[in-house]
Image (cartoon, rainbow, N blue to C red):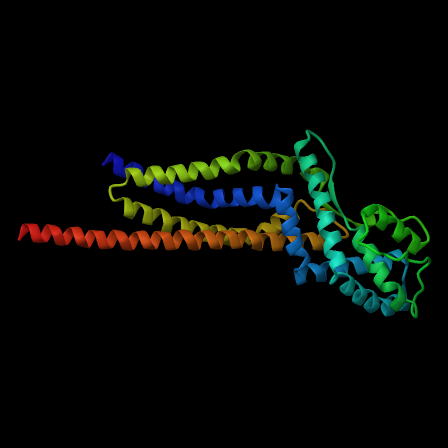
Amino acid sequence: MARRAAAGVLVVLVCLLAPFAVAGLWTKQRLLSTDGWAALSGSLADDDEVRRTLGAEISVVVLDAVDAQGRVRRRAEPLVRAAADRALATDAFEAVWVDANRGLHARMIAALEADEGSQVRLDLRPVLALVLDAVEEPLAPVLTLPGDVPELSAPPSPEEAGAVIEAALGRPFADDRATVVVIRDDRIATARTVYRQVDRSAILLAAVTVLLAAAAVALGRDRWKTAAAIGLGSALTLALGWIASLGVGSVVGSFLGEGVGRSVAEASARVAADDLGARYVVTATVLGLAGLACAIVAAVRGRSFAGVAHASAA
């Protein structure tokens, strides 16, 4: 009786831990790994919502940078937006976007591993340079840029982009006008605590969850039924985890700074939440099907044993 109760407790623990184990592994693989972050960034570059949002943000930066006002701004706005959409549909944009996010990831991990540090920013100057290059000619009938945009033969680095922007504007350009505050000063301590906990415990939590599942099956009176309960119960809690992942975007939003790029980062957070949600759905489906298969085997075995017992009694 005690053994059966212990198995039941372990099944409940496994089902409760499963969503956290999946989220921890996803975070370590996708957010804390440079390659995983770069892969996720590449998928963001292909997302229509992210590109639309970024195009709108960069268009405003361009119009502000060239000091477009009143009627001129109203005429220039659709031209700039169309140029932004063209620039963001190119391979050059994907290259600078992934490079910018790789640089961001390196700075973010360094800040999170340090005992103190300042806000972490995503540098969008290379994207702004691409848009200026695309808009220079179509904008000419409405508004001539103060300077000439140097020809871009390759996706620019942040430093090269800064030089392109200043050449186009004919004056210095403040870097913070084209950067996104990804982690604010007042939230970096919280982010550092979360990072360290996830980094240390993600793999351990997954391993403990698997070991508890194995222990539950070993202690269960009917191992097939115990395995079925683990599979089906975990599928249910993972489905609840998927529902909870829909709110990741709003949580990430609390760490973001105001100004240019905030809506881009929020859109990116929603895409990342969808990626986490997809992980939940796939894992829940696999475990649910495995649990169902175990339940079927348990039912078949139960009928077989009942039939043998009935025949023996006869």
